[in-house]
Image (cartoon, rainbow, N blue to C red; front, side, top):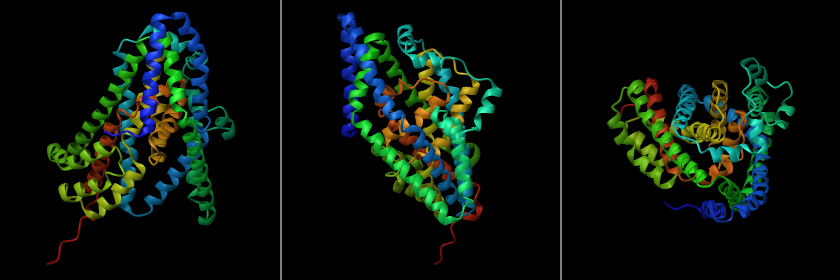
Length: 420
């Protein structure tokens, strides 16, 4: 597997920071404490550079996602069924992650030293102040002041406002609507440029974060990150298996035959780690191996590549659940429901983003909405490229599952008989 140079540099910085931090903790404890005190502000500064782009980027992406979905849904009944199915499947996989990830993490013993190190930060103290009551949560969903909500980093009210704004735009005269959509495109593009600038110094930020944590927590953080990688990979494999169950229950097809038919597309996905690059293989599997109507495959699969990734909500919630586990924070049902709902909405608007940009623009809002600290996300960003092969395979599997289910409930979309 070939990784881009930027990813290699970030992973190298992660490894080097771990080695230096562990070495200082082992042989020079006093120097380790000094190094951690110096490195922590550097790492936090880098994270703040990423965090400052989150609100405008998410606001623009959600508005654009609503506009794109609305445009797609106007192209016919098959497209509307596909959009409905996308939302239902994303909700299903978000619920799966919200239930399974915390349950699995609860079975893993947490390093007391790691928890103490992370909980020593100021953000951890504010994050563990307790989940809001149901009345407080409901009262805060719709912002009384959208600008204040954005200034406070309250992501759920910001996203709710963006949804209202996006749907309202569909009722505005087309020329004016296109001006606003163009502005949102410009804001999103500008924020992505800033994120790319900040990611240029990602090796420095990741090195500083890893050194500081390892110097204080020792080997516990290395084991925790390895556990995070295994958890992500396992959750992605579970999502793939769920797709086969959906095929059996709702499409009335053999799971073995379905798995055999989509295997070539899965191989391309695993090798390229790109759903877009896998689209030709998906179309071939859909038409020639699954026997799906060309009208459905040609419409649903490009829509899925544009709007639909089943592993996105899984990624967001697993990362947030891991942060809560590392800090020793018990997640309430309300926090998990908030994260799951936000994960579904954000995933619809973030499919076209590059990998590292997508991670910070999507995982950070979900983590913040659940009242959790964001400091560990810099380390999770560095290792998140490792499970990406399973994520892309899961996304391709989900897209072909969606196309098969749409075919099952779209009898009018069958191919016309061949003429001799």
